[in-house]
Amino acid sequence: MSDVLQQQVVFLREVDRLKSVQRMTTLGDRSRRENSAEHSWHIALMASTLASHRPEGVDVDRVIRMLLIHDLVEIDAGDTFAFDAAANHDKAERERAAAERLFGLIGGGPGPEFRRLWEEFEAGDTPDARMANALDRFAALLQNTAINDGGTWRAHGVSKAAVLRRMDPIREGLPALWPLVLRIIDEQTAAGHLTV
Image: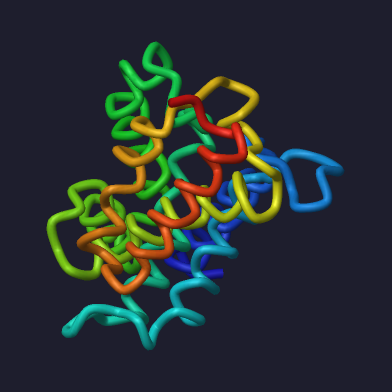
């Protein structure tokens, strides 16, 4: 086996661990918590499904690749609940260290490209990254509302204002969805699933 292929196999074995990273959100049937690999698959599929709503100039194939790798760092850093201020304090530092280790396993080839895509997602300053971030936020909205009747938001007493701030990247990243986002948040507030 060539050195390049061996590095790729090592990387693929390592990233399989993403299936073991549990998230706060539950599956739609509430049978268990979602894992980060399932989340990444779901939002990559969202990118393809919602491609007709993308802003002009967005490369959906790049968005999908970005979404497939954006949470790999959780293998080392763990999933951080968006509304846990204490856990978010050192999140960026933990995730940077994880990116260094994980993308370094491949060395040449796709390693540097994966690292650039991850960094672009984190920076959120390109149209592709803005759409990817918007989809990441939209997935949480769907899971906490349509599927789970308030889900983790209700369980943790999250406010309408906090959810609006968290969903704000959708306004620019996928503006066609913003009116739907506002309607859903208003419905969740009226239902008592978000605090005022």
